[in-house]
Length: 378
Image (cartoon, rainbow, N blue to C red; front, side):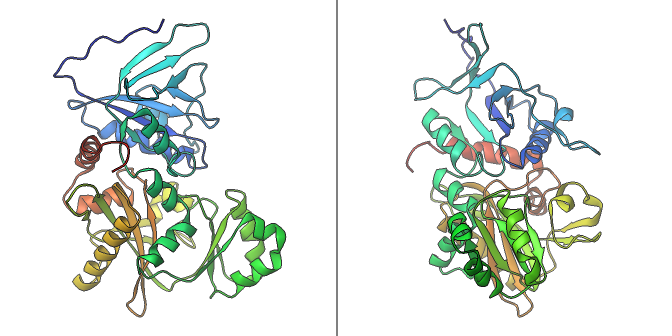
């Protein structure tokens, strides 16, 4: 018989399950994000339950110790494996989370009011955990199933943007079937783009698997490198100009989403672009500027495009929208990240800090939005 948790008093703090780690190549980044949230979340308002997902996919209870989850010199953090398994309820009869251990009676961790999924990439940011939480009838931070899945796929994302009459840059998509059936035709389509091009896994983040290709001779190797992370690859023409980003917050109810100040990342230190190393391992050569030095008219245009993209995709809670400002002064939308980098030094918290919302306040705002939103169709 399962051990039953004691009844919760009316004055009990909101119980938040932080879920992090996961099966994607962004496992360590997710752990580092969890460390930041554990340090900043208001413990007077929230009772925190850290739940890690191992690289093999097991859900385990993790110590409430940020130091174990931070990126340090020479070490990327990882959720430790365990014989115990955290189990979510399925259905709407209870929000009680349990821990199952071999040969033991299942142990109740207690009810969870809301889940904060700090997962990046496939098996987390792509609608999978969102669907699981919908089945469990547990409220959660961030976008729902469809928006999470569609925005994880850079191809589908651009199709939705174009349908909403949003300007996007030139690109081509190479599916696994196309690559295996007619590699030459796929290469021809990519070679027709203006170089340099960026070759990317279609469904990955944190710049994992991305290569900047200066000439056609290196294109095939870059596609193979991207295919190590995703059999579907997108090749985008390089845009000459600046990359500018904004955060979007809200997205359900009658109120329109709020859009932050514009931010810009300037990368030095020999990095060809804002790659994984620059993002997480070489912060000394990365400068985030917010508000970015752009005219009021350009800032307003980027904010309008971001809000339109956010709503066209059906996003909720939070997203970061990345745009290009070309040398001719045109604004193109590049992509939406539905679970953007979320350490205090990441762009999303930084642009909101510049907009007057601190990191702890941002965490609180996102949890409040999640608690106000029902599960299911909306």
